[in-house]
Image 1 (cartoon, rainbow, N blue to C red):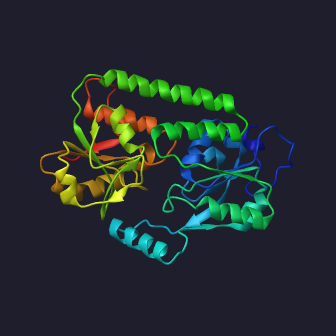
Image 2 (image 1 turned 90 degrees about the horizontal axis):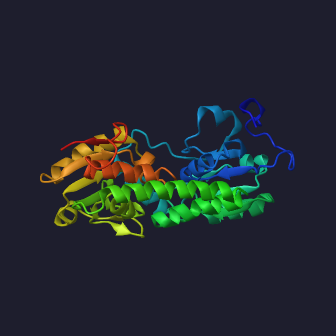
Image 3 (image 1 turned 90 degrees about the vertical axis):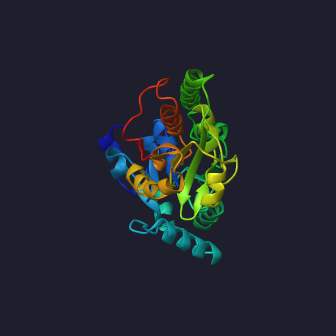
Length: 314
């Protein structure tokens, strides 16, 4: 479908009018998967945090809102999140009326992180209450392999399994190329800080990215949730490279926070990473993250570092 033919925001496309499905994504990483699969024309609903290309914005409706944390410090954001969780309150608001008006076929959600997106149980309850006929697919990857399998799951649910297989094959080929380029080289100890106040050691698939890039992940939580720690504990892990990649921040915000982290690691290289664009969203761009980390650790073995992905502080 060409851009002028896409349904306007909130419009209902009759079933059977097109071969595609009506998709709603309730987390940014799923939105990126949808676009990578070439299904942007079928995406009718997103969250306020999803990155929607300008050419598609007229065809999507925001169905999940949340607090605007711009201007809040990391410590203030952490305190707000903890208070909401302790009170049993949701961090995100599902605009049920908007969702019902979109008449979706498939809703992509998650249970991986309550801080990152609306839990799938809330979505399923809303779908039942509204009488929607949509299927709900929860994406809950904990490792890099899980992320690649979640791409296949979206492709299967959206009826484009061949596209998903081709996409995953291409991503695996890039990962293999990075691994081959850094094979046999000394592996520096790498700590990844996923939040700075309080500090969090990175978890989930992030240690896998460091492995692929030719580093030795330390003070991380492989295949598990990221967890709060202390600067003393992070220093005790003796990292040679510290990557500051605070969840929810792009490079500018990460660099600002990394400036405060650098003082804790006088003997290590400290880098800021574009967290949202490279390593915290469980989508295809994680491969960009592996390539970026490899360029930091082994600059003479892989393609040069793109300046919009990372910035060295010390």
